[in-house]
Amino acid sequence: MDINEIKKLLPHRYPFLLVDRVLEITADSITALKNVTVNEEFFNGHFPEQPIMPGVLQIEALAQVAGIYALSQTGTQKNVTTLFAGVDGVKWKRPVVPGDQLKMVVKVIKMRAPLIVCQGTTYVNDEVACEVAEMKMMIINNK
Image 1 (cartoon, rainbow, N blue to C red):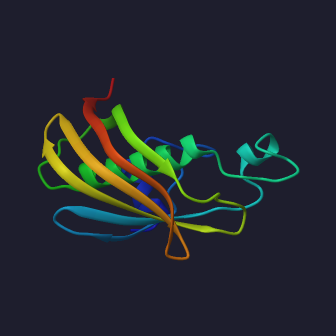
Image 2: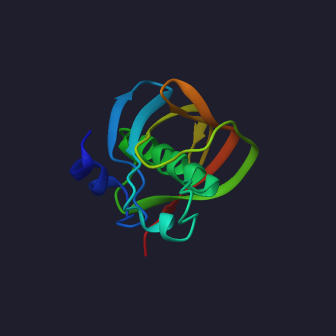
C-alpha cells in the first residue's frame, strides 16, 4: 500500500501522518515503514543539536498502522476512523534518528468492533527501537 492508498484510509496529514508505506497485511498483523528524515517538524525542538524522534510519536505511528489495519478490513463501514483508547507496557530500546527507516509491526490480539487490541514493535535495522505490550483503539464514526 503506497502513501496515496494510506491517505484514503487515515485522516492524518503532514506533519502528523507517520506512515509512508504498508509492506504486508495478514489475517492478524500489519507491517509498515516510516522514513525518518531530518526535515521532520519535530526535530526543530527535539533536540536541535542531537535530533531524536520522540517516543510518543513512535507510539502514534504504531497506532496509525493499527488504524490502517482496522480500516482496511472487509466489512469495515465507511466514514469511520480510529482513536486511541489506551496504551500499556511501553519500552524504548534505542533512539530513532534522522536517516533511520522505522519498520513497524502491529499484531492484532482482538478485533471486535468498536474495539481493537494490538501489540506493536518498531525496528531500525532489525534492532528493536520500541515495544508496546498493548494498544487499545476504538473505531468511531466521523462527524
